[in-house]
Image (cartoon, rainbow, N blue to C red; front, side, top):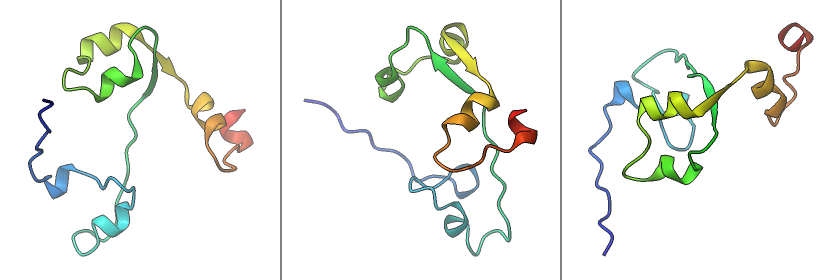
Length: 89
């Protein structure tokens, strides 16, 4: 029998909504919200499903296995027109 994860209630100041509606989530708490993105990386040998398990890779394993992805590569994959010449060169 698989034990279902029980997560604690999220700390409002250290969490984000699962549906991506950040401004609505923090409405009434903050006047404005800033989003900081961590670097992007692509695993070489680590399977993506491993990141969803209870025993996900450690920071050291991720740094040792993953290849960094440039902002230029990320912007090319965005589903909307964000391909400004000053960004992509």
